[in-house]
Length: 129
Image (cartoon, rainbow, N blue to C red; front, side, top):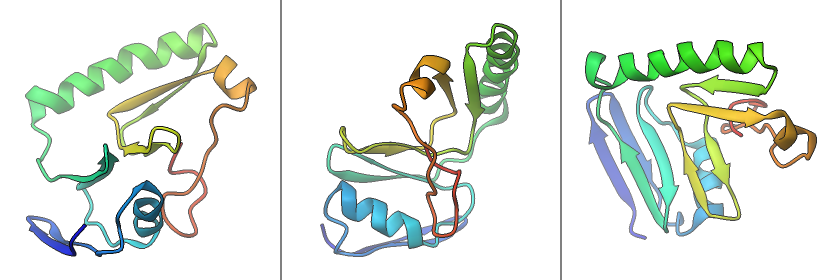
């Protein structure tokens, strides 16, 4: 991959040329200075940068409604935990990283230790699943 610098409305994102695969992407992500509100992910060997602002009724309100519905249902039935917007999800096996609008983790998944909390950035402990 070539060295890339993207100028976005919220700042600048510099992707070094040594980011060539998922492990190097994760190393870069831990130290990268990514502007707030910009989502960076990795899929099928490519770094993805989502700089689109969330539109109030076309996106943000919908994900809020989903969280308002799922959160109480999951808690009430003690099914697991729902994480809203802002957490990163990484599958090292699938070489995939993204920041979804929400994630549900079942009690069975947690009990089987099939998921763990990690830090997306240095000195963080619980910003990435």
